[in-house]
Image (cartoon, rainbow, N blue to C red):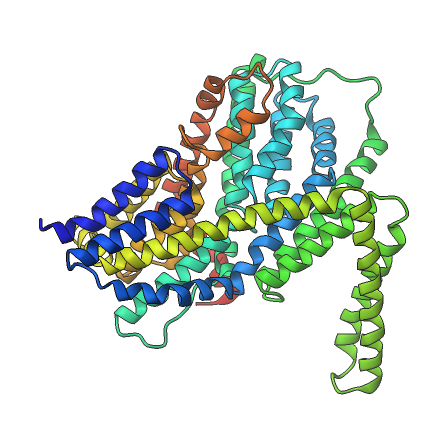
Amino acid sequence: MPLPEILPILMVATVCALLFAGYPVALTLGGVSLAFALLGHALGAMDIGLLYALPQRIFGVMTNTVLLAIPLFIFMGVMLERSAIAEDLLETMGRLFGSLPGGLGISVVLVGVLLAAAKGVVGATVVTIALITLPTMLRHGYDKRLAAGAVAATATLAQVLPPATVLVLLGDQLNTSYQAAQLSKGIFAPESVSVSDLFAGALIPGLMLVGLYLLFLVMVAIARPTAMPPIPPDSAALRGAALIQQLMKALLAPVLLIVVVLGSILIGLATPTEAAAVGAVGAVLLAALRGVGAHWAVALSLSAFAGLMFARAIFDARDGVGFVLAILLMTALALGLAFALRAVWRAGYLTATVTKTTQMTSMIFTILIGATLFSLVFRGLGGDDMVHRALSGLPGGAAGAILAVMLAMFLFGFVMDAFEIIFVVVPIVAPPLLAMPGVDPIWLGIMMAVNLQTSYMHPPLGPTLFFLRGVAPPEITTRHIYVGIIPFVCIQLIMLGVLWFMPGLATGLPRMLYGG
């Protein structure tokens, strides 16, 4: 094979080697790409003028309205974490199920579903769950490996249950790849894949994965009751009506927020970015309720918002009375939100939330810019044509190609996290896959999402393992964590197999909601 044709392979291998050595992702992608661009130009394998397209691509990333949902969803999740709303959820659910064999483990999974839907970020979810539940589980005699595995697996649900940040980024990359695949086939009015499609497609498989987790824990509780003993009853614990009242107080507002955010996306009332903005404001209001003297500001904001919705339905846009009423209601809404933000700031939630949101958003977009340069140089070196020929030449046609890509993504998970795989691998393999006959983009996206979920639990570099190791009690060793995640990774692979043979689980709901 001539040296210029080997360059794309060497480029990918160099990136993987440097990532495995621990170099920063964004700098690795950018530095390696520039080095190989110069090398390719020197060997006559690439025109260096192709790099002039980079500023326009970066500008396209920065002005992408879909990606605006990322910082908003992160803000919503971090605000719920900082204001201890998630802690109330875990403690209340633990009281409800803890007296049953395996009940505390079941509570962790159930609350993890709510936290995943509210946060969409693995790091915040695993730290919250681990700090609250692991000491309690160990104190009551839970098996260390099982406790660590349950917490790690539950936290990764934040990457497959909407509104996961992974689904937002994957939807954006798949949409670009799907349109490129259609253009390559001569379709000059290409269809698109939206983030809403992936949200709808991920809902049923995500809930089925939750069901498999619960089934596994129940089976362990039956087969090995000493590994998941019930919590002895506490004489001071709430019971009966008092427990139900506490449960409703802890659950009602967060669940309502999740339903509003996801429901508005799924029924088409709002785009993911608009729904994320509503979620961020809702998280601020929920946090303000925990402050002193802020209840009136929350009530004013909600009343003004409800009034705006009512006025929008009753009055015509050109009606003078409706216009004046809308101005008054928007003023009241702004006033209520301003006082709510002041209460959140005084409580110490706002500064920490904005700081964490800025850090995580900067990390994601810096990696995205580095990956944009990587993708540009890789294509300039002819790597996309090489990948297309390799996938087309595999036995089994489209099924064989998809199976090879799924296996490659699974193995990449040992050295790369989900964001890196989305930005580096998906733009390379998705266009040729989607150009093959019979490959549904939504089904492929959900298959990738479930596969990417395992990358968060892969030794040696799975981020969840590091998050958990950092906050776990000293009794839980790294070995306990690595062994404990094995059955849950197997469950995820089983879910991949179910999706392979039953693609309607991923495509049924989007087709029912949006047609096609």
